[in-house]
Image (cartoon, rainbow, N blue to C red; front, side, top):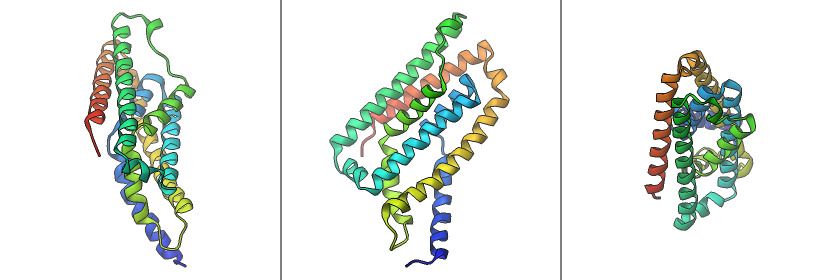
Length: 212
């Protein structure tokens, strides 16, 4: 049986790698920042909870071998990839439509995101990004000490990643909250909506053309 010192060393090593992944900007980061700016802290934390749930699902899928099947099948990978790309394009279009509503100064036309809606957005955005599963598939086994069952060990490692994600979300949300009054000014909100919409569309296109 592997000693506790070895287990702690594995957790710390994974924590260091996961921290880099956590702070690297991507779809999840953009979703949280936009949600925090448009809908406030409470809704942004709900989006983060959805993202965390998606990561947990990917971690379990990796441990039981489902992600390996996804990686081995170009057809399955492409199906998830295209679905994710379509969803990101939809988010981008929604952001651009929100920008148009701001331009017409018609608040009734501006979409409102609820806590439940933000949670669902976080789950769907994460689960429809097959890169998350592939990263877990390639990363988690390297940090599981010999002699430990893959499923509980993988869940423990993902738990470390989720804690880091929640902490990073807190930092981002607090930073955005400090400038939210500025971001919600009509002209600034107009350009912010345009920028996030274009970035979502760009990420969707990149996901659509990216292959294993």
